[in-house]
Length: 166
Image 1: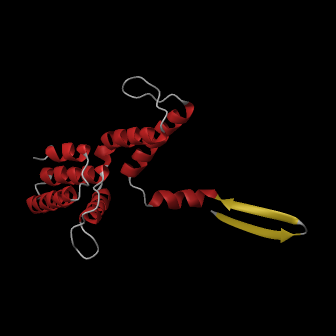
Image 2: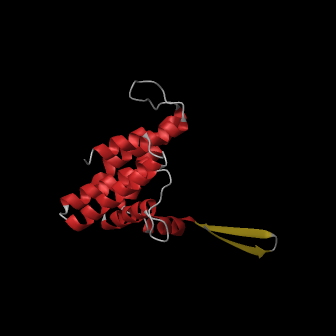
């Protein structure tokens, strides 16, 4: 946001250039991220009004549950709008989840969202018939899960997700 202030005989003229700021923000966003933002925004507005209901028709009172529901739905709905830039971003996130800066396997707690991103990439590689990337990611993901399980850092939900690829 640009703010220009001119002092002319006790009058202050403030000019706020909002349109240029909006254009700059949307420049780096892909259709996939814009779609996800719209869905999450609409769900959070429903939550704030008290209209968001869970699958058993109870009103959602926990903000974290509302965010989880919104992200889950937005992943499903916006899946068709993924571009190469989004795939590259997911690849970077998955690599950060698997390896540290020195290239060694991490043994910290695995996050479900990262596992879902890696499963999405596996499915994408399978559809594109990129067997080298598929096999490499599969090997790295399973070895990362094994390291996390040795430290008792695997949750039940992650194990369910990993069963899908076996």
